[in-house]
Length: 69
Image 1 (cartoon, helix red, strand yellow):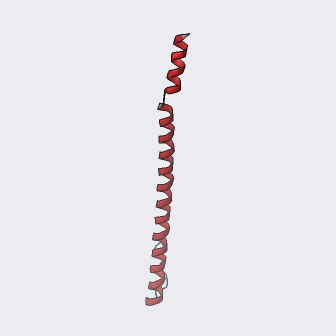
Image 2 (cartoon, helix red, strand yellow):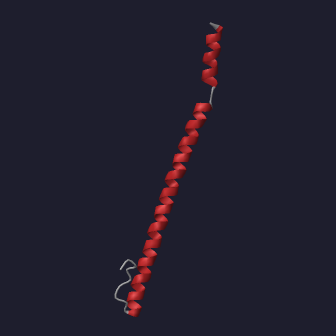
Image 3 (cartoon, helix red, strand yellow):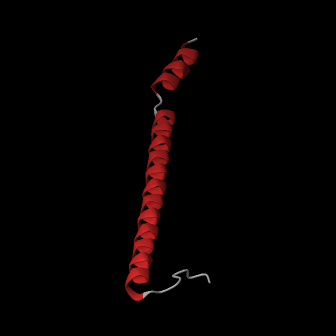
């Protein structure tokens, strides 16, 4: 019976599982923040190039700034 109580106390006091859950949540938050930051930078760069293309079109009379065509 004492052995069973010792096992139960050990299981209750073990914090390895809780630490793993905390680290998993932290990694998830960091991943979401990183993806959101990269997406925001991508939108900013795209808008910057669009503004540059519009400025060149207005100033130089360039017909098309599309890099694909």
